[in-house]
Length: 339
Ligand code: FCA
Image (cartoon, rainbow, N blue to C red; front, top):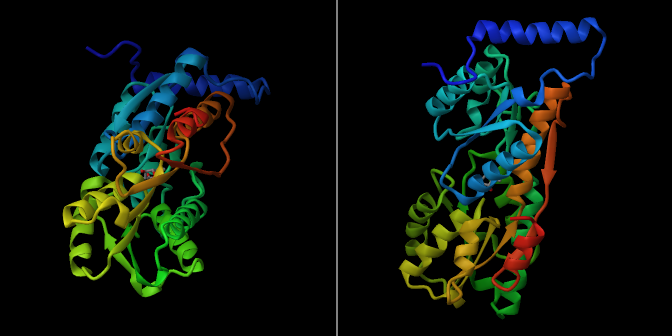
């Protein structure tokens, strides 16, 4: 049995063409193309189990409830899953989707599939790369301003090193890197630049390339780097997000470093950080640059909704900013950012 509201693709196509035709033949370029209740969008994320993405999808669903459109939450952990999620959305009659892709190089394939179905696409967090390796400007994007937020990470680490009276000459950095993902590289590059500006020694920065953007891949990448560089007493840890920094911090604990020997600073300000700050004793996870995942989820869904209903294409690239969150202020920052 087809699900309720399902219409054969031909009928849907005819219906939307007729709508477009009648709107354009009347010269009403700004009239809504769809009645509110007809709008259904997908929200596809690469890591559905991570608090950051759960919060984004929650915020999009809440907006849908408020404005009267439906949000279908889907996982897209690899290319195959993304393509079937898009097929699934099409058979449900969705007019478009927001996506944080599992691999930014899938951009052209995803955009093609969407085009075949006449669906609109916007990206959130991780921007598609075209076949030429450059960001796909044709797909509207909303994401964090990676380099700047990375700089905030580096500045925070440098300030805390000073507060602890560490000699910058003898501190090592564990840079958990993910250079395949441009936003990740921007973030770690920004952090590195700020650390070097503050007098950090370049040769003391050690890369731990992770395969993914989660805690376990960061833990696996960090462990051998720590054991190979056993001479250092003090370590700082940074990465594209707090989940990965937490992997590095867990590896440092397993290696035998105590919290006062480690300064880890992440990015996101999601449930992963709240859980860490709620522990009875402080850990090597000093802080995180919090960005509003609520705003990311809400705004990207709203941009798509406006595009579908008013034919207004969203801005090509919206960049968001961050706020330092530590064990001392996390509840306040959480409230301020609506998290
Ligand atoms: C990437 C990271 C997420 C989050 C997001 C804004 O997708 O993997 O943790 O930082 O950017």
